Length: 366
Image 1 (cartoon, rainbow, N blue to C red):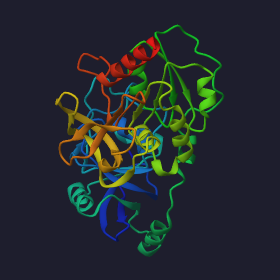
Image 2 (image 1 turned 180 degrees about the vertical axis):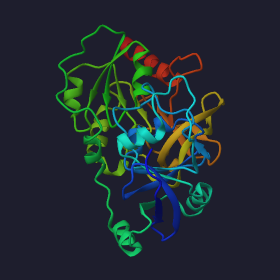
Image 3 (image 1 turned 180 degrees about the horizontal axis):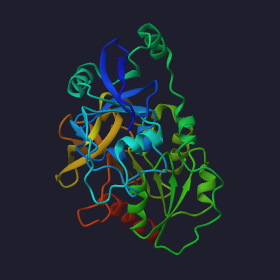
Image 4 (image 1 turned 45 degrees about the vertical axis):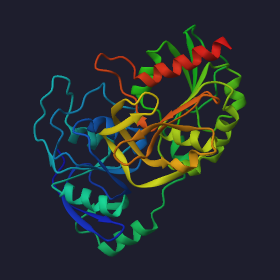
């Protein structure tokens, strides 16, 4: 266990919170958002979407089932810090291999507990998501504020280079699976790869800077644009490649991939005051009227009015705030979702992956 040490959190508007350290002890800057999940802290910490972020968990008790070897969403841990109300001192789960504290020390993730997480959540709800800095309590406050004020995140494309597939694109697919899918890997989660591979797909992951010509050379049946960290506005080169690909083969975008797809089709994307981070977001499927409860992790949203005159129309709408949670274009053979596709209770891939395979079936018949 790490030694308890009094720590300070300062937000960019000057608001201060105090807590006690766990995990790694260090000074760290990051963008703060609240996560409303009850479970899943291991997945949250290893989700590339959270690279460099400070995560405030609104559920009060965290860590009671430990961590294991199967639930990581990537090869590393990407969150900068985790803020919780109370850390469980015991772990009780047959799959547990270590405690949350041990995991965070190994991954060098800063932890802060015994902080009023609900007050922090209310502050963010009222003022929007903010940058923050965590440091030992004795650190000079003026210097911390100065560091926070000048802290600049690396460009999104630079961040992706540290968490996505890199290297040459293979010359061809090596197996005779029913579907061959190229993936623009912007930080794809393992659970998404497992689901699409369960749909009889062989995938080839390519980096964000791969030109469309290199992708067409391997003759995929479909293109998936993955989730990932960062601002879609900074990824204009990827948007240009997607724009060229539209209409030439089925395309499926998830979260950041959905936002880039919307930009390629002529729509607009804006940053949200408070992002969607949690697992109880109700949405409506515009095609059949079904209501679904979804897991989400995004801070950017597609402007609904901008879809008029674009290549897309809304396919899913959030029932809390009426924001766009999905887009579709039959003409351009493209779909995108803002929410996280999760397997069914029986372990079957999310229905959106099946939709994507049906699109590839129809495309092959042309």
